[in-house]
Amino acid sequence: MFAPIEKATQEFHQTTKDTYDVALRSYGALNQGFQAIGARVTDYSKRAIDDATRALAQLSSAKSLEQAIEIQSQYAKKAYDTWFAEASKIGEIYASLAREAYKPVEQAVTKKAA
Image (cartoon, rainbow, N blue to C red; front, top):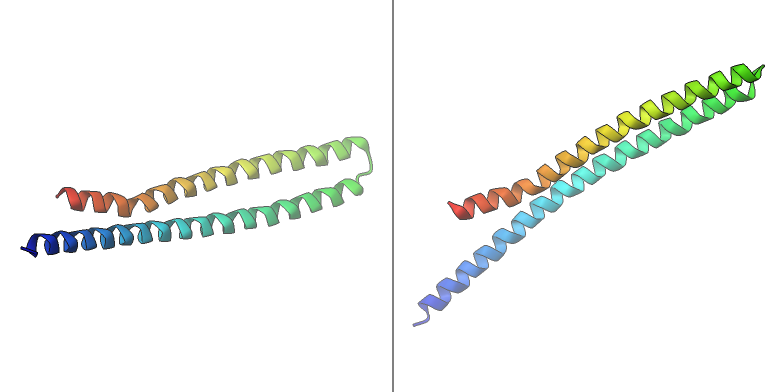
């Protein structure tokens, strides 16, 4: 008489455990991805500040307006190129993060469907 209830309870317990495991793996992937993004942004910020400081030092020693404009133009081009490259890399990390975080869910769905 209690066998169906016990079986349903065990199935519910197993499903809950499986769901928790999937969520835990997914959150683990998210955590690793966000750490990688944070490290990348921190590194980029340090380099950007160093570049800006160098450009400011060069600007302060410029001997003519033309030289100052040239220094500023070079700095602006380098800053934009560096920012664009970094934004592309961070975008790739976000895409990879989404794929990695979804993998445990996809595996669980595939396992349940089989």
